[in-house]
Image (tube, rainbow, N blue to C red; front, side, top):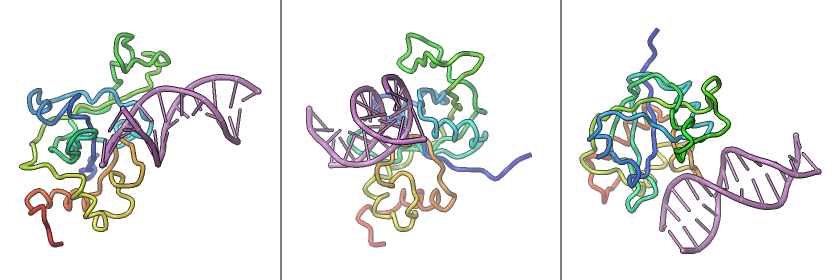
Length: 164
DNA sequence: GCCAACGTTGGC
DNA sequence: GCCAACGTTGGC
């Protein structure tokens, strides 16, 4: 059975892994997510072909940098089993893995980043529940509605000093 | 580097 | 199950 395409936001620190890195490698296992809610979105919510906005966080100009697609079903994050990895989880076993990920495939870099400032200025249109601009939000993976996806992308080709 | 916000852990 | 301590996130 198929279901309609869904849309997601995934954050990454560009110093660690940026849209340019994804462009270079083409496809990447989205490892290192160690938050249960984010894990559940990947494990239970995502399907191959879903749309992904890649958001650059914890950097000089935070914002949406590019688009990707979900390229695999969820499977255990290998780094949880690796004692040498910073993502190692001593409580995870191969029999009962704790952390799951999906592969993410590069689609395109935006012609310009959609900056957090702009996203905030459109908070009304995006809705109060929009996780990215919700107060104190730290989730690194969360759903985006089709309406939010469309509105966000419409900002790509708009003047930054906008007038509504 | 600061610090507010938040999730997780662990003692009880 | 409570909650204080702690670690992390992420904008600034």
